[in-house]
Length: 137
Image (cartoon, rainbow, N blue to C red; front, side):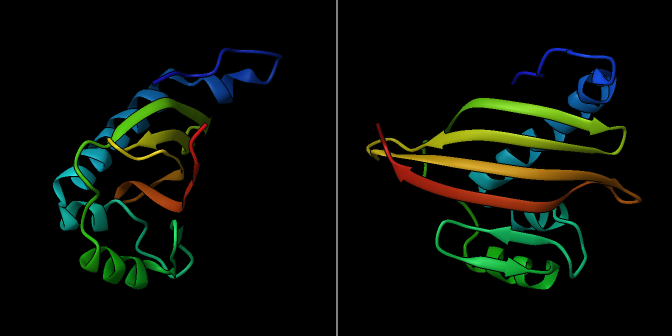
């Protein structure tokens, strides 16, 4: 994963290495849970709030209850998921955005995933997520 370089006088918020490392670690935990169909961890890592949103490839959920129900019905991803171009962008001490590309063996489609993470009393949680796929190049 990469952290964007510093630029300009206000770059410190966007270059907080500690936040980037913390979010990279919890993002790796989320990805591992996704590959292993670990519904408990996937549910835990989404913000437990009605304002949390997840827009999937062919679905959408509003609120933690809808996200948990959807995840229980769709616990994991196909085998062989590969990530590339992952960027962790801290937005300050308590927020970050993770953007990544993903692909599956034998699929010509390019997946795109963006998650907004916030530090809560319970730890880092996804407060908004978007997943999409487009035809490969």
